[in-house]
Image 1: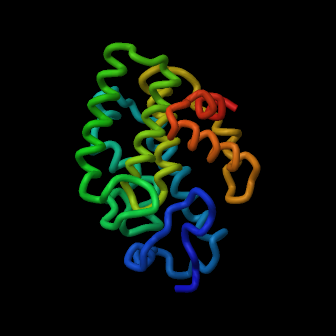
Image 2: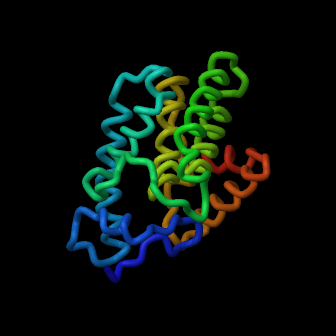
Image 3: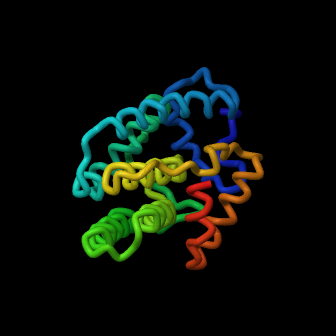
Length: 198
């Protein structure tokens, strides 16, 4: 396959087996892939934001996997399945279930004990789940939608704007987003919180 995946800054590289999971063999360019993925993601947004979801539903492994599956099931055979390879980001592939369980337990505790304000809880969840990097690809988009679901369903507040969603591969907004993620990696969540509402 001549199409290259994950070659832009901030993207995850796919191995050959993962590339073989592409369900639409006519895709020939990155732009076509992005278009098909975005159509699938729009369906997942409709599915998630129009459902009645409780906190215990959202902070559950089954939901995390189902959300990813809904976002990519028409494009990738491995949608909703944990990655089987190690990547340039994320925990070791064998640690994914354990790390995700700890995150879900921590987030449940944070919410029950009002450890963080709603925006910060959602953004900390988003940052940590993308740091785990559960899936072969789509982790950033998955984490942003998960944060939107948390802020909408649990806290009844408007979803995040994410720099007005212009996170295309070469935009200045994406550069700002990646810098905010690196700041959060170092423990400073302020830039990511600000970006999420920009």
